[in-house]
Image 1 (tube, rainbow, N blue to C red):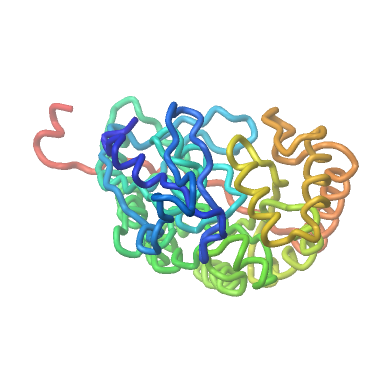
Image 2: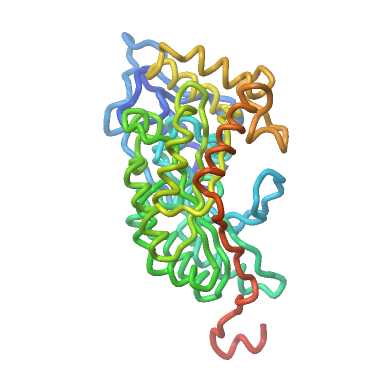
Length: 369
């Protein structure tokens, strides 16, 4: 449990009336596996009353962690270090694999994940402390690894930009992944880093169907604006990798060819994908979302997603969980491979340069460190 305190966590975890909340991905709270008590409304016609609209507004809670860099051991991911200036994500994607991380802070992976945002305000200072340690050797850092570094709160907090400023001073390589066009605000820093082969940006491009995007990823940039971000980044010399993720059978799988073409036309240099998997509490959030927004095809989506993972909606097995297995997975792989080859033939993203890293002097005290 964090220093935020149990009392506030309980108050914020009040249940809703089961109706979808406008502008949110989760329709309700889900139980936290780490808590013995769950609080909520039991009888609507009794003394308990539903949460009022102001109770549904996003809350920002400041936390001061002791460390900010996370060691990544998963063989499925192409990086060894990640950092998350924020915990929770207001983008509200119903499928987000990071939702269960909110449970470690005493919150629900449902609505809490997208309306209780933990702000690690000392992230830039912690990052600089890590880079100054004698034992640190340069290794690309992923910003972020769980929640989006350019979610709405970044406009005011500017933690992602401040972290980029630290990395630029140290000439340290960094990759970013986002689905928010706010990344263009930092084009000045990113273009300078890219000129030295110190950065690349991955843009998550899930759908160009605005009706689907509006309910699937309610507080993200539109698909059109993400394509504009790809174009602007590419024009500034920043290598862009596109993640078609997740591919959801019955929802956006038919869009794969058009997504790859649009990304390539905008200037992206490479592309990858993952298939949907609903780990932990994500399954309940996604199923509830699916039944409300797409009741006509919910059974199909669930069946085909389960077919990707041996009959379940989730698979935690390394080497298999991101791409799935079986006939549906093979079909997705073939389609993606064919159209990636068609639209990205001859394009490559440059490797990041580790040789430029240095620790700038901070005064006479550096002589004794």
